[in-house]
Image 1: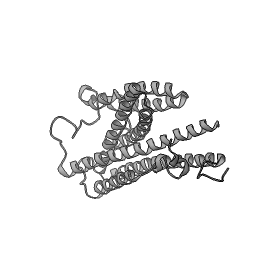
Image 2 (image 1 turned 60 degrees about the horizontal axis):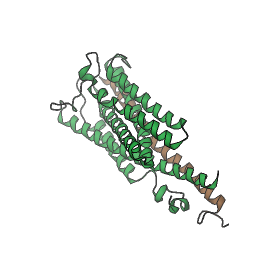
Image 3 (image 1 turned 30 degrees about the vertical axis):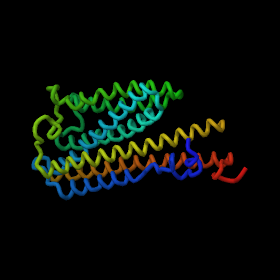
Image 4 (image 1 turned 90 degrees about the vertical axis):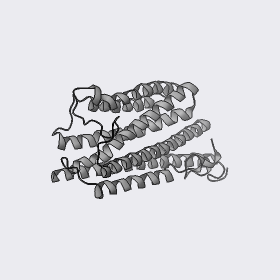
Length: 241
Length: 53
């Protein structure tokens, strides 16, 4: 507990604002990606403008995988060391992962509706597993909200987080081992050379970079919010509220 | 494929609203907690946080 934060409540723990310079840099990177994708990236011949959804859909998915992986790693550290900072990190990453996964589940059907003629295809393994991962993250956050004892909350939610993260390799590889799929095969993240024209590839890689920055910046901001919440709880407990 | 312009714009606008909106909710939640902290400290006369005891 720092005296700085109690004396200067305009800022978070240690005098840091929850939305800091890192978030501003990430937001500028995403804005630059928007400009590049909308104005300076050519249209794909068959899909037209709908293909440009790819530059935010796939980076959002990679951001979601990153956030869920951080949740699982932080959960493992919590189970091992019982360090509350790891539990806080797991919670922060899970919430950010839910936002990114939600974007994946919004942008995907928007594209599919135009290109496949259907919003959703239930028998496609990647789509269904992605929805399942979304429910696992929601379940994780609901579980955390339902348990009051911090030690029990940390332990139970950590186990769920580690099990949930095991879905990620299955989601990514599902297009290879499932014969029944409509989801396009990877065009960049695959063993062979990327099969995108150079200009599109640069936009796509910029998108991954920008959304990873955004993901990490949001996790940092959400972590600082958790620090503030814990500080508030400690102060209230100390004063007997 | 001009009819795909609408869906492309919708996706980009929704993404901006969702990510930007989420950042705003973090900021608002932090603001609310800081105000509560300020009130609690003020009530108990924490040094530098309000009227002296």
